[in-house]
Amino acid sequence: MQKVIQFLREVKEEFGHITWPKKEALFDLTIVVISISIFISLILGGFDYLFTQSLSLLGQQPIQQSTQTNPESTSSAFIITPASGTPVMTPITTQTPTIKTK
Image (cartoon, rainbow, N blue to C red; front, top):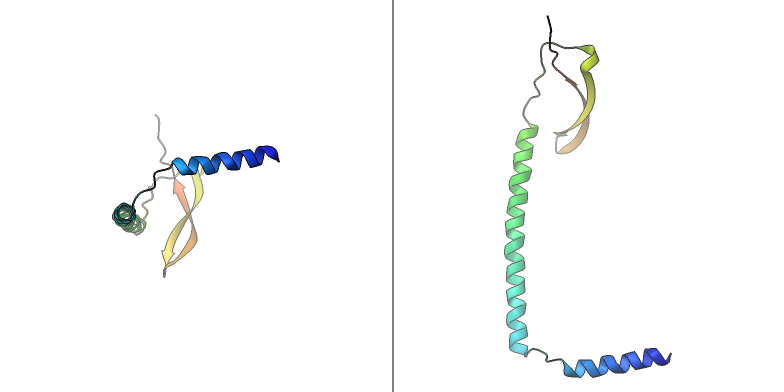
């Protein structure tokens, strides 16, 4: 218990050595921090919007399948497609093209 009391006394002494900023400087620095935060959030929000829109455009492209299929090279997967704004798990089948050797 004695160590805790000694620690708190030292903390109180150290707080006396701190030079606190003036009210005007504190206000100015607060405005700077808030302004930079808003600016960065707008930039990140813009990138997020562009990224989301580009992915939605990619999701609207039809999936092309090869005409030659090999039953051994067919694998199943799921793709999330937007239907009326609600994501739906739709099974798709991808087929790996086969190479014919002579």
